[in-house]
Image (cartoon, rainbow, N blue to C red):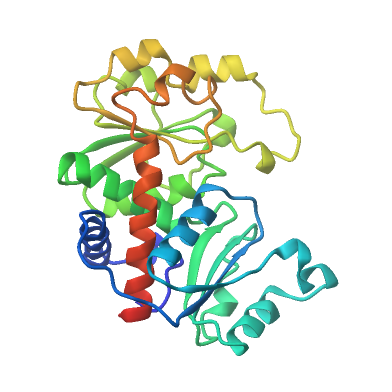
Length: 292
């Protein structure tokens, strides 16, 4: 694997291999040493979990990080993303982790001769988030085939929804969406359902953050209380879940909007476990790309 930019580019066998490798690291098996390898994390959008998770993974692999802050870089002088990446390659970086607001920002970078790991491109893809979600699901069920998943929320603007739809479908799960009309995306073939019609049947409830920053200040036609009532995981809906069902969210969480405040750390919630798994998945991605 030379790059990781989209779940659509990963074969099922590659996905399974990364999950197994991450689970081995989590279980305490020996971790490859990437000492002497240099990496830069280029985040052009705000991030807590993904950025810090990559940094932790890199530290655990004994990599050296080249500090990059877009607000203090020559990007502010008009330097292009391509020239920024070529600069970091030229000074000796072995890989680049990039989050950028532009969909498919990575396409001009793939022939530069340096591995590109996509940490999120606009509303396009978020492959390491999808992989950590898959790892969390596999830890619970030991399979994907036949699982019923509802992804609920801002489908149109969500790179998580797009990545997980492609990966879960490829692995044999049945994925449906639940969303306000204004956030529907017909580019994916999943059926749209009312949350209350499936909440007691699904194995996984995957909630999405309301992405205010992508709505350009335009009213979405409802207030947060109405959204929570119609599309959020309320305490009443939680009570109807199957005993084995789990609740997921990529975070950050808007409490009492996508999910009731009391449910964020409820027994069926895997939200913070997802964050923990993110470190191991990113370790697996880095070692697969750099140690092949």
